[in-house]
Length: 280
Image (cartoon, rainbow, N blue to C red; front, side, top):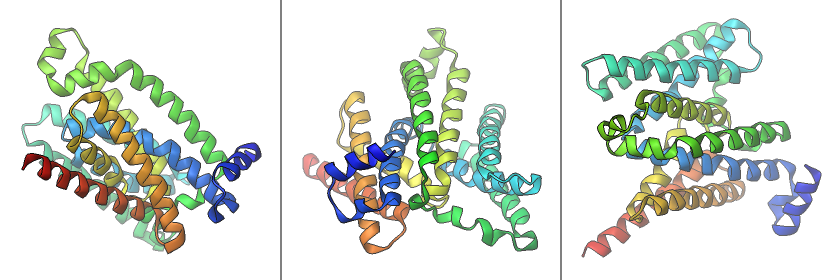
């Protein structure tokens, strides 16, 4: 890591790069942002904004279960519960006649309630309240190593399933006629989404993590006329928002996750204006 730190100081000779915690946060943003952008495009395409939001909220129950089981690292219980939550919600959605948003709302509300009930006992909630807003400046060198592994694995899986997933998002019936295993591909996507959301929660925060998935991709969709441009613009907007938001939060002494979301929101509204101007 020392070599990487030296290179970063040489390329970015700014005051904030004197501190290791900012270097770690900068690297983390460079890894997390593209992952959020890639998965977020499919979240937007499939109108799954409520789903990803519920997935973020489920992390609270994962933390609560981990505390009950005496697990020192909540990440493991969060990850396990988020995957079960995502697959369970998907299964119920396919078997139930209720509307999708109703089912998601029920699951999300239940998960939050369970988490709050468990964590509020014996005054434990304060211990985990930091997960609500996150702190990307707490990223360590070992965390970056984990993120790098996840980044490589998810990109490999994404490369394999992307075309099938794209066809499913456009026309599920056509995908089935081509012998694509629709449910399997959808479940793989949900697992990838659960993994990325879960490992990012403690740095980004439960309250804003869904915004980081949705807003950059929504902005990119406003200015993209092809799938390739949509993917590329989503990544560019996500990375730009992440880096600029991190730097601005350093000087404003504000929450990095929320600042990044605000930058993304500004870009989104700019793309809306661009669309309006083009339309006129």
